[in-house]
Image (tube, rainbow, N blue to C red; front, top):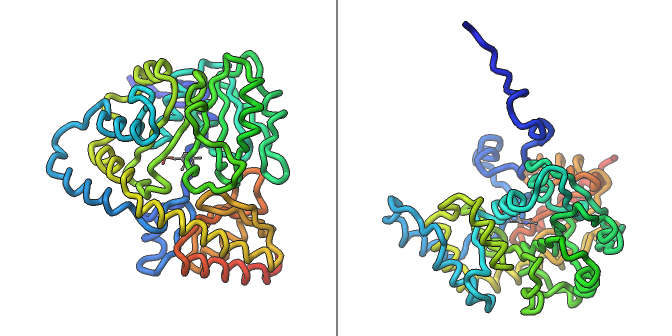
Length: 369
Ligand SMILES: *Cc1c(COP(=O)(O)O)cnc(C)c1O
């Protein structure tokens, strides 16, 4: 007998409403579209200087051992991170990118009908983790200048809130959470809320008022701090990130992670990258120079959101139109963020790439809307 398998009715019902994450167009797709034409890829907050050379060397040294499973506990990596931050090894959790850790925290904490609170606009993966678990998302708009509205964040918290996400510098706005605002929140937040502070771009931040990861911050039992090797360290293609926080929380997260969630090359490369201060300084300097380059757009009537990250949000009037115009010239930026229809997000490139993008923006500003 012939049966019809109704996929839509058999999968978990909340999955029907989830839209798969749409990343900035990948290198491979671009090659198909543009062939050998030179491209300026400023759409995924990748490091324009490439990976740390020490990481590349570590990968080469490790290649002959690829037939062996990695260390499931990522011990060498967690040890190196613990030393780097001055914490204990069991306060460090390693993941297949911090995306992995966001999903694992969602699986660890969220039951159906639990709630998360997150800023808006911000990194979509927080909401994705909640949707997968059939939890409810409370998105709290940032203020007009993209600073945190901490009173609104606090009022969004209720007895069902399991996780509060704070992203600083925030993606896609590049703006920071102030230390004083973090302290204000921590004094008032109910003890049952677990706070995830995403520091993916923290290494680029320079504002004096920004949240700082201190020993005291690490002692909150209900806070985890996320870091990634994808941005400053230039290892986005490897997939490795980590989180610092309460060892008891990690003892549960270990129960839901895959047994070998960080691959062998990623573990070795990340350890090497951590020691590569030369690459780190060059990457930071490039971000500082790039901020100055893009600041010149303000002289031409663009609103440029002051950035503490390795990207910048620029108001062009019509984000998609700007995107299309730049794309035709082989310059890829990001547009279409909900709530930011008038903006594009531009990842910092090397000096010439930034100059090309700025020229393109000046041209597009002459086009009729
Ligand atoms: C890029 C990014 C991450 C890191 O993602 P990985 O999975 O580690 O590559 C995390 N949070 C934010 C806000 C980001 O922009």
